[in-house]
Length: 348
Ligand code: 26A
Image 1 (cartoon, protein in one colour):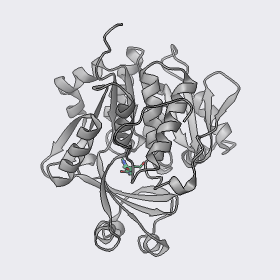
Image 2 (tube, rainbow, N blue to C red):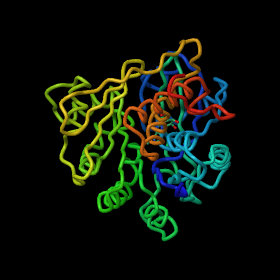
Image 3 (tube, protein in one colour):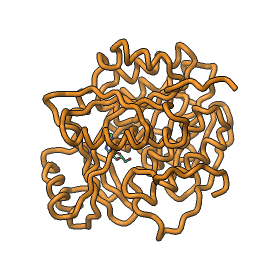
Image 4 (cartoon, rainbow, N blue to C red):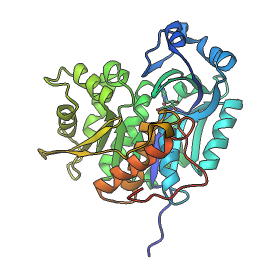
């Protein structure tokens, strides 16, 4: 058997520490948060973090959407498969992130900012909803210079699949586009998540600039709807939007684009460029008593999917891996995976 190459998957986004607690309506109201949303913190939100820690028994958990995905993909792949780029501070939150990625076997190449603190995300859990409120801190200072450092760019040149967490569109589009160009020039795979409704809504220009490079575009039903609204599409039905996404103009014509829209407990929708049919993949059933929280479910789905993509598996199996990992993650506290590791099986 040919030796497997190391670090075939490169991920980029914002490393954050999640400050997660079970909250209530009053807490959401106090900070003007929706039950199920993801936003950037404004001045009015800055009290949330201390409030969660002091009054709601919050836990500190490694987060950052694409970092969760990268940990998830590494969870399912052979050792030394995934490397992740993003920006952190030089502080104890960064040390917590280092511990978490070490457990997961994920290699990180952080840009360390001596002035800015590591980013944090307040996570308010109410039932199966999660409200995410992010103060990006050092993650907002990620830059192209870091990615282009010879030792980092060598990792990029070595990799075969790139995954961009859509939240990075708020931070460093030039780094995203550098990976996009590398992928298109060398027929590598460029995968992007829309990440949150506010990304296609308020960062439309930079999202659209990257669209011709998407080999995989992943979103949930709310993000698909936000995309439809931002682009004035005639239909906001996720089945129509997923087809539009698949059929946007594409730079690298050697690969057909695959667009994926998850819908919580409803079937995952998949459209392939140039094909009429929208495929539906039912999610794996779970007893709702087993669900801990749904923070990171979508990230886990992307992680399992990418594990399949990196290993060259069929679309069906890659989707199933995503659904398997999402089911595992929602049984844990926050965007986490069970240890000792569980092995994927197509039927459990
Ligand atoms: C720029 N923003 C808002 C963000 C995020 C984010 N990750 C990167 N950038 N806002 C929330 N998250 C992460 O999403 C995960 C759940 O999908 C949280 O850290 C959480 O772990």
